[in-house]
Length: 262
Length: 262
DNA sequence: TAGTGGTCTAGACCACATC
DNA sequence: ATGTGGTCTAGACCACTAT
Image (tube, rainbow over all chains, first blue to last red; front, side):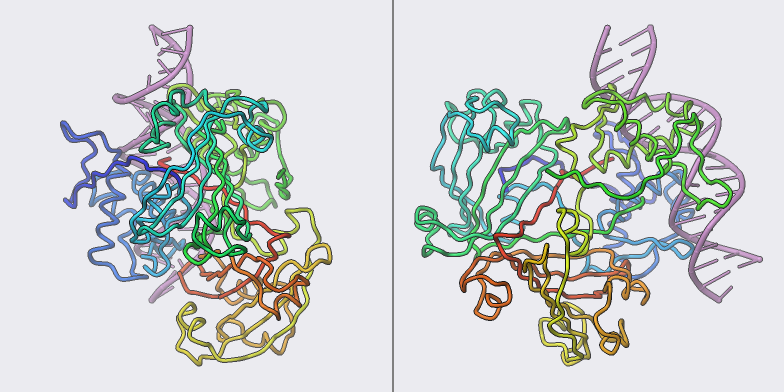
């Protein structure tokens, strides 16, 4: 539920052979190219629960080793697009059941995924001192300088969520002077602290008078209270966010799985 | 605040070699045994951000191939116990950041993980006909026979959650006559429909009069409304559940990650 | 019995980080 | 320059499912 992310696009190839790196092309691992090819193969012609070609078939068709095939199929399995049954084969998952597992997405991505138009209004952008909660979550000493943003997030122009974010100032120097950034995540990436995981705690609550006014609901209106601590790959806490979502406009959807044995 | 882990002991071995299968022992894949050994190695003597032995080291120490090492380390990465940096090494993740990603757990497991004692009171156990919501989620035609349970779930004796569950009767014949089962998931497993994934939708709401009385809270008290559709490996919907959690006693915790390319 | 996915080996070259 | 993880190959045997 935060700002945007850049992504790569670049799909490729339904030709008979997976090209790992073309000249001038960005190097794409073969297993990744194969995954794309298989995904296309599924979309184009395979019905749910229909079998994919066997792994040994795929080796020959795409001129790759078994391990490369398995990595590609493994990815599709993790994405929930296919399922494997030992001794029987690999089969197309029912589209109704496909839902990629949890990924870290920004508020904008989330809202666009619901076919609405995201926007936000900056209410607060300041340099301040970490309070106890903030210090605990960000592993700072209380009183350390942090950057604080408060934003009213909207979808199709309607208030959806009131969001408060705190970042260690050391990570984003100059942010306050710069003004509201296009994307907080980009700032963090450029600081060498790309967001990698987030721990979230979700509660039900009712809004107070100030929140009610901002979110345009009556006092005591129910809301989802989401607390998030975001970390980079090294486990450093890079962001703390507390968001309040209108219960009538927002629900939280996720897919969970039994433990995978790979 | 978490640290529950729980389970599998059998650390096995500080000997130089990982034993994949002993005679009479259940066959355990080498990569799994190695994962356990590495986890123990980390717990015993490595500080956060300290480097693990290189993959080639581990090959020799444990007399396994590189791929086996990589599968073991891969698992630890997915569990958030270590992180890899290309060209530099594999490092121990900060314990504060370790949090198992989402797994499908039962209410009982969940509550025990919070160090409370779960219990439940059966309010309804009946054979009935699928209504529209139920038919949609379970892919049945409206009016199909389903088994319906309503249970008041408690933690340390205090009401925590009011849960309604519907299952296709064809999957659990005899359940109504049998009485409240020890574990619904076991019933489903024995029916060849082991739960594999679940889609959940979480909303904030306030309780109505009946729910308020059962949960022992005032009317209009906030609550988490969780709707779940559970599926087996083939994508068949095997269970629909709607739960209402007291907001003061329950929060929903999860860890999400950026997309992995591993 | 034949075919499938699950596991494992012993190599190899590449891209990247560190010194 | 050395060592690390990332990718890839070409085999092999096992466990399981179908028939």
